Length: 405
Image (cartoon, rainbow, N blue to C red; front, side, top):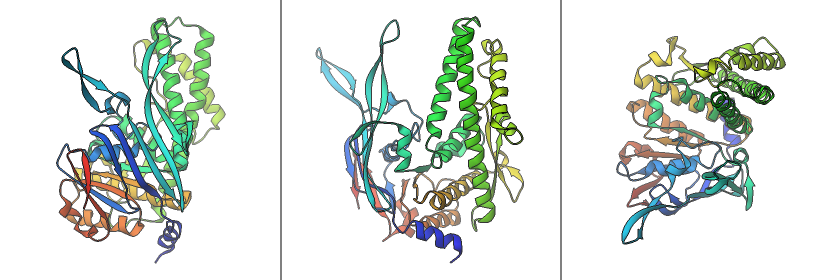
C-alpha cells in the first residue's frame, strides 16, 4: 500500500456522512425519513420517481443553491386545497434535516425556507429566505455548514459543463473551494449582491448615480473580488500539485487553469495593487455598463480543464472523455480533501453510469469502495452496480417513498 493510500485509510478510519435524513414538503416528498449507512447507497427507480430529489436535498446540507441551482420557491411541494368549491394550489415551505456523523461525533443540522418581508421598499414584498439550524442553534450562516459536512456531486447536466458558457464552470470550481475555505460561499454571495446593487443603481439613474455611493460599492466589490480570485487560485494550485504527485491509474490526468484578468494579475502583483486596479476598472466602466451586461472581473473568469496526455482542452474531447475528466477532478478533490481536511466528503452521483464504458464504471465503483466513503448513486438499473452487492445499501424509490431492499 503506498503512502497516499495509507494516509487516506488512516484519516477515514472514523467515517463521516449522513446517518439520518428527513425531508418535509420537499419536491415530491410530503415526508420522508431514511437512515443511510456510512457507505455507498444505490438509489434506483423509474425516471421521474424522485431519485435526484434525494440527492438535491442532501446538497442543501452544504452552502450554496444545491445541485440544481434551483429557486427556493421551485423546490416546495405543491398541494391542492379546496377554496370556494374549486381547487387552488398551495405551496408550503420545505425543510431538510439530518444527523451528521463526523469522525465519531454526531451533529444535528437542518435548513428550511421561510417567508420574509422587505420592509424598506415603498411597497413591502414577501420573499423566500433560506435559514440554517445547527445543533438546535437557529440563525446560523450557510458557511457554517461546511464545518460539519461537505458534498461533491456529478449530474447529467454537468455532461455539458465544458461546452457551454463559463458560469456553470465557475460555480463548479467555487464548490470545490468551499470544502477548503468555508468563507468562500459568503464572499461569492456578497460579491453577487454588491454587483447587483451597483448594476441596478447605474441602470436606474442612467449613469448619474451618487458618486460616493458608487465608490463605496466599487471598493467592496474590488476587495471581495480579489479575495475570491485568490481562493480560486489557491484551490487550482492545490489540486494541480496533488494530481501531479498522485496520477490516477485509470482515469485521465488533468491540468486545471484559471482564465481571468484578476486571477492572472495575482500571479505577479500584490493583492492590494490588484484591488486598486479592479476598483478603477469598475469606475471606468460605469458608462459602458449601460450598454453591456457585465464588466471583466471575477464574475467573468473561466475554469479551464485540459486532458494532459493528449494536450487537449476538455471542450474538444469526446463526451465519454469529458465525463472521465470530471470523474478525475472529483476523485482528486475527494482524496485531497480527506488528507487536508481530515474528513471525507459525501459523493452525490446522479446517473453516473451514463457516458462511462463498463471498465470505467467498474473502476469508479472500485475506487469508491477503496476510499470507503459515503456515496449516493442513482440509476434506473440496479444491475449496473452488482459489484456493490453485499456491500452497499440498495434503495428503490416508488410512490413518493423509499423502500430499503
